[in-house]
Length: 372
Image (cartoon, rainbow, N blue to C red; front, side, top):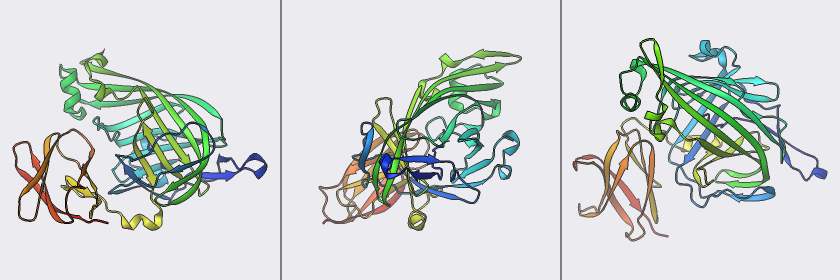
């Protein structure tokens, strides 16, 4: 799904209406915009509050090691525009995904996607076409409004495009597969107030997105199609229900998106990086595999695994004399961030290594520990 880090316009209602924000049509994304954002995969002390007006949210504990971005351009400039001729805009992300959008009245609607479609274990590469109506933004939405939409997305993959995990689960060496996602989306403006981020204080309208999803997979053998949905594990089919909370600000941006599980416990958070601060953040490099942050650290350090082959790995800590202080093992299958308590260690310079399951050191780097 699209992350939703789109530039939006928010106008304030008159004071007699308690200054409740509403989403405006005036500032839908425009060609030439660049949207910067960060992702916290271990959000600390970030929870979904109950619905209601005039709230205060403090998300200053958010942190992330790398910056990502999306560039907004005319749809006709996209590499896959020929597959989505009804689109008006394309968002090109730093991870290579193209998202095609159509401005239809008061709605900014998803038309198609091309590239690596998911950031989770599925990592499907191809083109997904959407029919029906699946808005990413609904203009003129105000507090306590709710609207419903339905759409279907399809992606077809030829034999050489089918990921090994899918072909192994399906079996029988299919000629192609068709993945269909039927989505029923409810959008509800359920709260408004003030939101404090590492980048500043914002007046916001909070909008809840709930997607009920039915995913089916068919495989073609020769001239015949066969439903093979039951052969695929849940992690390859994806969730049946996805919930997110998006915060829109008067500054004309969607500043935060909370992604939750079905129990509405926050799993990860995407948040806006102000343009003036974008240059202070790094971008991941090929072959980096493991990155420690913050560095210097005080009581806890996070490690982000980057584009590493699935398997069992260890993070091992040493002092400068080479003595092993502790070792942690992790089963990695996709993007993962872990946190380690280092409060028991004295200030100073330490080494950490990433090891494979056979104990081979893949990288060794330094970590500095400081104390208040």
